[in-house]
Length: 467
Image 1 (cartoon, rainbow, N blue to C red):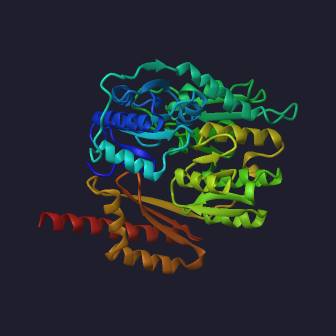
Image 2: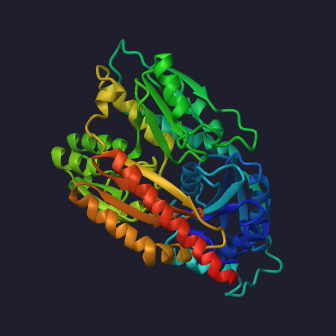
Image 3: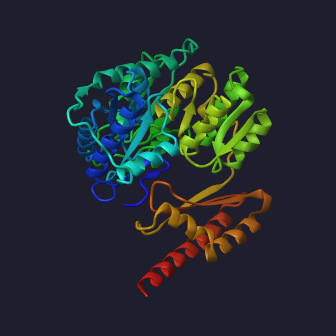
């Protein structure tokens, strides 16, 4: 077993790369870590999304926690940000979300939150990993066995928290909007209809699609990673806005009234402009990642706010926000963090803030509201590599030889009018190519060059192993 924690917890194909034994050992290891810090019986919230394997991992994780002398508080099917919220709300010592987020149903994952509702630091994850892998011996108590408690009713607290965000804005009398929500057959299926109803949504009308999970249809041709259907339905159905979440509802993307995509960069830009107008953009700064579109930086210059740039991953965005005390940050994928309301990315919170914007400026169409940023053409190509390659192996692969030479040529050709970001995925067996510039056809050509170079390098590496 190689390195466990990626950029967003432990993740892999359920039963193969991620096993029940790993979940059990995580529970046991987390229990020991918490007992050492607290010197009394801890309690841990457990939530899950709608994947078929969720029950298996919940049972294994619960067994590990209880064997380690820790109480397990089962929240059931909930969004990832609800686990973070309830960890704080219920005074738990940690929270674990069982989800592989936007990945297909055969994957699953384990995300751990500390007592403050924040994701664990890299250092804490590394210590947990050593315990799980057996590098640090575990000594579970022989008599202090943990109990299991059902806390699923507490999700009403989270629902009320998100609904209260919309209540902060008083709508203009007589306005009416129609909104279509895509729940990705995931965690939002348990909460969204209760949050986004005519009473909380200023009397507006809401319709929903992809809200009937069966254990295997999560993220299947729906949700924030598959926006085509939602965009088409919004345009053809005369809706004012489309809202899509991913499998665990920590992401949110939008479709305007014409069916055009509004990505995370555009959402953060619009929220930053509004916060600046309200005098609430702390430090005059928004936090984004190195993959954020150059159009965002142009918008920041135009409207007069600063930009802090981090590595890819919402945990790194949050770390920078906490360091600087900043109010808003996020990723193009739709991980949006509003630090005044949440400790992690929250898709339904983002949707609530967008709806409050729409109520504040009812005369503007969604396309007009989000026109503060004009994105440059940007393409992303994912190149699959063998699952046996670790994140470190993937990083080494792209840093030397023919791939590095090809990347240098492309970067030189783009000059100041574009850029290339070539990186290994932290959660999947992929090399990600991101290209940005003025000419989309040129970007496509460069992407094919890079893809060919990567595939050739992988084939050469395989040949050398079998020789």
